[in-house]
Amino acid sequence: MVEDTWYLRLVKSIILILVVGCLLFWFLPLHINYYYEGNRIFCIHDGLKSWSRANIEFKRTFDKKDADVLIDHIPQSQCDSITEVAEHNSGKIHINADYQTTDKQLTGVIAHEFGHYLGLHHNHDNSVMNVDIPYGILPTDLDIARVRVEVLKLKLDRL
Image (tube, rainbow, N blue to C red):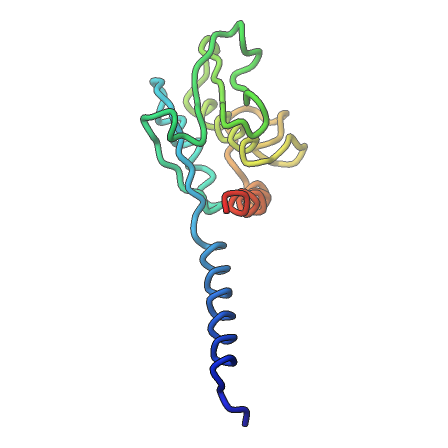
């Protein structure tokens, strides 16, 4: 039987710390603060919350400088569709102020645009990222699986 020397105990402790740290890193949620001051907060909240199965927690902030994502309204002259992401992963989502949508449509569109923020691209699957599917679809199991990989990348970037 090998004697437990101080350095063997140290190695065991380091391995245990690394394993626990990796598990916590994987299972603890990614926290994202968002800023929105429009009158359709429930649509915004539901669109973002639809990604919670991907281990993401959202918190509304009332200070723009504390926000990871800024959601605002812009005139139709600056936006050709219902919404758009200002630049990929810029943290800005613009809502066309002049486009009339139901609450369900806006919720689905916010979920779609937030998918871009998380690193997803358009596809032709049965997915919230499919541009051919009518507005209002929420993230599917496939979307959640894809986003879990992107969430891990975002967590690593924040280290």
